[in-house]
Image 1 (cartoon, protein in one colour):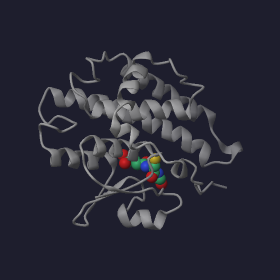
Image 2: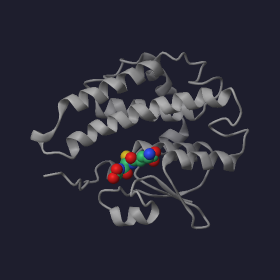
Image 3: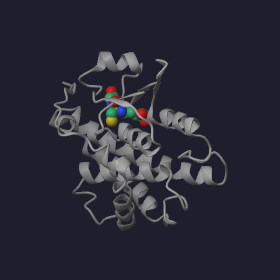
Length: 216
Ligand SMILES: N[C@@H](CCC(=O)N[C@@H](CS)C(=O)NCC(=O)O)C(=O)O
C-alpha cells in the first residue's frame, strides 16, 4: 500500500497512525495538494490528501473512507471503530465531534492563508474557533474510561489526539497547553505509542514550502 499525503496533514496523520497501530506495512509519499495538484487529482478527483493506493492499484480517498476500509481488513476484533452497538456509536460520536472541530480550525487556517490581509474576515475566524472550543470542551469532559470511548484504544483516541495536537500547534494562543487537562492526559498516552512516534513529520515534510493560491 502507498499512503499519499504529508503527516503534517491531520487527515493524513490519523490514517498513518492507524496504519502503524494496526501493523500494516506501507510506503509513504509526502506530497501536498497545493504543490502537486495534478498528481493529487490522479489519486483523488477532489485533489486532497490523504489517498491510499492499494496493492491492486485501486485508490481510496478521504480519511474516513480509508479508515473504514482498514477496519474491514483487520476484522471485527481489531477494528478501531467497533462494528457492534452500543460501542460503535460511542466511538463515532467522539470522532465526528473531533472532526467537526478540525474542520472548523481548517476553515480558520484557510481564511488567513487564502486571502490577502485586508480581506481576512476576523468574525468568521472567531465563529469557527468558538465552535472548535465548544467541541474541545465536550471532548475534554467526556470522562475517559480510561480511553475516550471505553476500555480499549479506538479511533476515537487517535482522531481526538490528532485534532487536539493540531489545535495546540495552530492556535497556541487560543488553546494553550493546560486548557483541556483531560485531553492533555489522553494525548500524552497516545503520543507514547510507537504508531505515533513513527509518524512524526520529518523535517523535510514539516518545512516544505507550500504554494498556496492566494486570492487577489
Ligand atoms: N474530508 C477529507 C478532508 C481532507 C483535506 O481537507 N485535506 C487537506 C489537507 S489537510 C487538503 O488536501 N486540502 C487541499 C484542498 O482543500 O484543496 C478527509 O477526511 O480526508
